[in-house]
Length: 253
Image (cartoon, rainbow, N blue to C red):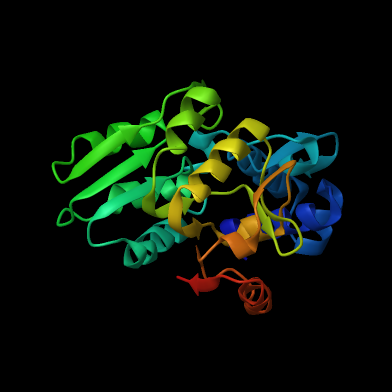
Protein backbone atom coordinates (compact mmCIF):
# COMPACT_ATOMS: atom_id res chain seq x y z
CA UNK A 1 0.00 0.00 0.00
CA UNK A 2 1.39 3.39 -1.01
CA UNK A 3 1.67 6.19 1.56
CA UNK A 4 -1.22 8.20 0.09
CA UNK A 5 -3.49 5.13 0.06
CA UNK A 6 -2.51 4.29 3.64
CA UNK A 7 -3.19 7.83 4.79
CA UNK A 8 -6.63 7.81 3.17
CA UNK A 9 -7.36 4.53 4.97
CA UNK A 10 -6.21 6.04 8.27
CA UNK A 11 -8.46 9.05 7.68
CA UNK A 12 -11.42 6.80 6.85
CA UNK A 13 -10.91 4.79 10.05
CA UNK A 14 -10.55 7.93 12.13
CA UNK A 15 -13.82 9.33 10.83
CA UNK A 16 -15.66 6.07 11.36
CA UNK A 17 -14.36 5.36 14.87
CA UNK A 18 -13.74 8.91 16.10
CA UNK A 19 -10.11 8.12 16.92
CA UNK A 20 -7.20 6.00 15.70
CA UNK A 21 -4.39 4.40 17.72
CA UNK A 22 -0.80 4.25 16.47
CA UNK A 23 -0.06 0.69 17.64
CA UNK A 24 -3.33 -0.73 16.31
CA UNK A 25 -2.86 0.94 12.94
CA UNK A 26 0.68 -0.38 12.66
CA UNK A 27 -0.46 -3.93 13.39
CA UNK A 28 -3.44 -3.86 11.04
CA UNK A 29 -1.72 -2.04 8.16
CA UNK A 30 1.48 -4.11 8.50
CA UNK A 31 3.88 -1.19 8.90
CA UNK A 32 6.00 0.17 11.73
CA UNK A 33 4.73 2.57 14.37
CA UNK A 34 7.25 5.12 13.05
CA UNK A 35 5.59 4.94 9.62
CA UNK A 36 2.16 5.49 11.17
CA UNK A 37 3.44 8.47 13.15
CA UNK A 38 4.79 9.99 9.92
CA UNK A 39 1.41 9.40 8.27
CA UNK A 40 -0.41 11.08 11.14
CA UNK A 41 1.97 14.03 10.99
CA UNK A 42 1.32 14.37 7.25
CA UNK A 43 -2.45 14.24 7.79
CA UNK A 44 -2.23 16.79 10.58
CA UNK A 45 -0.32 19.17 8.30
CA UNK A 46 -3.17 19.00 5.79
CA UNK A 47 -5.61 19.92 8.54
CA UNK A 48 -7.58 16.66 8.42
CA UNK A 49 -6.46 15.07 11.70
CA UNK A 50 -5.27 16.42 15.04
CA UNK A 51 -2.59 14.43 16.88
CA UNK A 52 -3.38 13.33 20.44
CA UNK A 53 -1.47 11.09 22.85
CA UNK A 54 -1.06 7.67 21.22
CA UNK A 55 -3.02 8.45 18.09
CA UNK A 56 -5.17 11.05 16.34
CA UNK A 57 -8.71 12.44 16.14
CA UNK A 58 -10.48 13.74 13.00
CA UNK A 59 -10.77 17.52 13.09
CA UNK A 60 -14.56 17.46 12.81
CA UNK A 61 -14.72 15.81 16.25
CA UNK A 62 -12.97 18.88 17.64
CA UNK A 63 -15.22 21.37 15.89
CA UNK A 64 -12.05 22.40 14.07
CA UNK A 65 -12.12 23.79 10.53
CA UNK A 66 -9.03 23.23 8.35
CA UNK A 67 -7.56 26.41 6.91
CA UNK A 68 -8.00 27.12 3.19
CA UNK A 69 -4.26 26.84 2.55
CA UNK A 70 -4.24 23.32 4.00
CA UNK A 71 -7.32 22.25 2.05
CA UNK A 72 -5.77 23.52 -1.18
CA UNK A 73 -3.07 20.86 -0.82
CA UNK A 74 -5.45 17.89 -0.32
CA UNK A 75 -7.00 15.74 -3.11
CA UNK A 76 -5.72 18.12 -5.76
CA UNK A 77 -6.25 15.73 -8.70
CA UNK A 78 -9.84 15.03 -7.64
CA UNK A 79 -10.60 18.73 -7.22
CA UNK A 80 -9.15 19.45 -10.65
CA UNK A 81 -11.44 16.84 -12.24
CA UNK A 82 -14.45 18.19 -10.36
CA UNK A 83 -13.72 21.75 -11.51
CA UNK A 84 -13.34 20.73 -15.16
CA UNK A 85 -16.55 18.69 -15.04
CA UNK A 86 -18.37 21.68 -13.53
CA UNK A 87 -17.55 23.77 -16.62
CA UNK A 88 -20.45 22.01 -18.34
CA UNK A 89 -22.78 23.77 -15.88
CA UNK A 90 -21.70 27.28 -16.91
CA UNK A 91 -24.14 29.49 -18.81
CA UNK A 92 -23.07 30.81 -22.21
CA UNK A 93 -23.18 34.29 -20.74
CA UNK A 94 -24.81 35.97 -17.76
CA UNK A 95 -23.91 35.88 -14.07
CA UNK A 96 -22.63 33.25 -11.67
CA UNK A 97 -21.65 33.00 -8.02
CA UNK A 98 -18.49 31.16 -6.98
CA UNK A 99 -18.50 30.39 -3.26
CA UNK A 100 -15.28 30.52 -1.21
CA UNK A 101 -13.56 27.13 -1.00
CA UNK A 102 -10.72 24.98 -2.27
CA UNK A 103 -12.66 23.06 -4.95
CA UNK A 104 -14.59 26.13 -6.09
CA UNK A 105 -11.22 27.87 -6.22
CA UNK A 106 -10.11 25.34 -8.83
CA UNK A 107 -13.18 26.22 -10.89
CA UNK A 108 -12.18 29.87 -10.81
CA UNK A 109 -8.78 28.94 -12.21
CA UNK A 110 -10.19 26.98 -15.17
CA UNK A 111 -13.00 29.30 -16.27
CA UNK A 112 -12.87 29.57 -20.09
CA UNK A 113 -11.68 32.71 -21.83
CA UNK A 114 -14.41 32.62 -24.49
CA UNK A 115 -17.44 33.54 -22.31
CA UNK A 116 -18.47 36.95 -21.07
CA UNK A 117 -19.53 36.37 -17.48
CA UNK A 118 -20.23 38.40 -14.38
CA UNK A 119 -18.72 36.51 -11.46
CA UNK A 120 -19.75 37.27 -7.88
CA UNK A 121 -17.38 36.03 -5.17
CA UNK A 122 -17.03 36.32 -1.40
CA UNK A 123 -13.33 35.52 -1.32
CA UNK A 124 -10.43 37.97 -1.79
CA UNK A 125 -8.16 35.21 -3.20
CA UNK A 126 -10.77 34.30 -5.83
CA UNK A 127 -11.33 37.94 -6.71
CA UNK A 128 -7.58 38.36 -7.22
CA UNK A 129 -7.43 35.31 -9.51
CA UNK A 130 -10.36 36.47 -11.63
CA UNK A 131 -9.92 40.26 -11.75
CA UNK A 132 -7.25 40.19 -14.46
CA UNK A 133 -9.41 38.16 -16.87
CA UNK A 134 -10.59 40.43 -19.67
CA UNK A 135 -13.76 38.41 -20.35
CA UNK A 136 -14.97 38.53 -16.75
CA UNK A 137 -16.65 41.23 -14.71
CA UNK A 138 -15.91 40.49 -11.05
CA UNK A 139 -18.05 41.62 -8.12
CA UNK A 140 -16.54 41.17 -4.68
CA UNK A 141 -18.92 40.94 -1.73
CA UNK A 142 -17.73 42.99 1.24
CA UNK A 143 -17.86 42.24 4.92
CA UNK A 144 -15.63 40.67 7.56
CA UNK A 145 -13.00 38.27 6.21
CA UNK A 146 -12.70 34.97 8.10
CA UNK A 147 -8.98 34.24 8.20
CA UNK A 148 -9.42 30.47 8.26
CA UNK A 149 -11.47 30.26 5.07
CA UNK A 150 -10.74 33.66 3.47
CA UNK A 151 -14.50 34.14 3.02
CA UNK A 152 -16.35 37.41 3.58
CA UNK A 153 -19.32 37.19 5.94
CA UNK A 154 -21.83 39.25 7.94
CA UNK A 155 -24.17 42.05 6.90
CA UNK A 156 -22.03 43.80 4.28
CA UNK A 157 -21.74 40.53 2.39
CA UNK A 158 -25.38 39.54 2.90
CA UNK A 159 -27.14 42.75 1.88
CA UNK A 160 -26.06 42.85 -1.81
CA UNK A 161 -27.25 39.26 -2.32
CA UNK A 162 -30.83 40.35 -1.55
CA UNK A 163 -30.83 42.37 -4.78
CA UNK A 164 -28.96 39.96 -7.07
CA UNK A 165 -30.15 37.15 -9.31
CA UNK A 166 -27.64 34.88 -11.02
CA UNK A 167 -27.89 31.95 -13.40
CA UNK A 168 -25.82 29.48 -11.36
CA UNK A 169 -24.31 29.39 -7.87
CA UNK A 170 -21.30 27.11 -7.60
CA UNK A 171 -21.22 26.18 -3.93
CA UNK A 172 -18.72 24.62 -1.52
CA UNK A 173 -19.51 22.73 1.68
CA UNK A 174 -17.67 21.23 4.63
CA UNK A 175 -20.14 18.39 4.99
CA UNK A 176 -23.08 16.84 3.19
CA UNK A 177 -25.33 13.98 4.24
CA UNK A 178 -28.72 12.79 3.03
CA UNK A 179 -30.29 13.34 6.45
CA UNK A 180 -28.82 16.74 7.33
CA UNK A 181 -28.06 18.30 3.97
CA UNK A 182 -25.21 20.77 3.47
CA UNK A 183 -23.43 21.96 6.61
CA UNK A 184 -20.51 24.14 7.69
CA UNK A 185 -18.92 24.87 11.09
CA UNK A 186 -19.53 28.62 11.08
CA UNK A 187 -23.06 30.09 11.27
CA UNK A 188 -21.94 33.33 9.60
CA UNK A 189 -20.67 31.44 6.56
CA UNK A 190 -23.85 29.37 6.55
CA UNK A 191 -25.89 32.57 6.29
CA UNK A 192 -23.89 33.76 3.26
CA UNK A 193 -24.17 30.37 1.56
CA UNK A 194 -27.93 30.31 2.17
CA UNK A 195 -28.28 33.76 0.59
CA UNK A 196 -26.16 32.74 -2.40
CA UNK A 197 -28.42 29.78 -3.09
CA UNK A 198 -31.51 31.99 -2.76
CA UNK A 199 -30.05 34.39 -5.34
CA UNK A 200 -29.46 31.66 -7.94
CA UNK A 201 -31.69 30.09 -10.58
CA UNK A 202 -29.65 26.87 -10.29
CA UNK A 203 -27.29 25.56 -7.59
CA UNK A 204 -24.31 23.29 -8.31
CA UNK A 205 -22.40 21.78 -5.39
CA UNK A 206 -18.68 21.06 -5.92
CA UNK A 207 -17.42 18.64 -3.26
CA UNK A 208 -14.87 15.84 -3.12
CA UNK A 209 -15.96 12.44 -1.83
CA UNK A 210 -14.68 12.99 1.72
CA UNK A 211 -17.34 15.65 2.35
CA UNK A 212 -20.20 13.16 2.15
CA UNK A 213 -19.57 11.53 5.53
CA UNK A 214 -19.28 14.80 7.47
CA UNK A 215 -21.87 16.88 9.30
CA UNK A 216 -21.23 20.22 11.01
CA UNK A 217 -22.95 22.76 13.22
CA UNK A 218 -24.80 24.99 10.76
CA UNK A 219 -27.01 23.75 7.93
CA UNK A 220 -27.43 26.06 4.95
CA UNK A 221 -29.31 23.87 2.45
CA UNK A 222 -30.99 20.52 1.94
CA UNK A 223 -30.17 18.28 -1.01
CA UNK A 224 -33.53 19.28 -2.49
CA UNK A 225 -32.12 22.83 -2.80
CA UNK A 226 -29.28 21.57 -5.02
CA UNK A 227 -29.72 20.91 -8.75
CA UNK A 228 -26.42 19.16 -9.42
CA UNK A 229 -23.68 17.62 -7.30
CA UNK A 230 -20.26 17.32 -8.95
CA UNK A 231 -17.89 15.06 -7.04
CA UNK A 232 -15.13 12.53 -7.79
CA UNK A 233 -15.09 8.80 -8.41
CA UNK A 234 -14.03 8.16 -4.83
CA UNK A 235 -17.68 8.55 -3.84
CA UNK A 236 -19.30 5.16 -3.24
CA UNK A 237 -21.87 4.32 -5.93
CA UNK A 238 -24.47 3.41 -3.32
CA UNK A 239 -24.07 6.75 -1.56
CA UNK A 240 -24.22 8.50 -4.92
CA UNK A 241 -27.56 6.80 -5.57
CA UNK A 242 -28.85 7.88 -2.14
CA UNK A 243 -27.84 11.48 -2.87
CA UNK A 244 -29.56 11.40 -6.26
CA UNK A 245 -32.73 9.99 -4.69
CA UNK A 246 -32.85 13.09 -2.49
CA UNK A 247 -33.10 15.36 -5.53
CA UNK A 248 -29.92 16.45 -7.32
CA UNK A 249 -28.24 14.98 -10.36
CA UNK A 250 -24.93 13.44 -9.21
CA UNK A 251 -21.88 13.58 -11.47
CA UNK A 252 -18.75 11.62 -10.50
CA UNK A 253 -15.75 13.01 -12.39
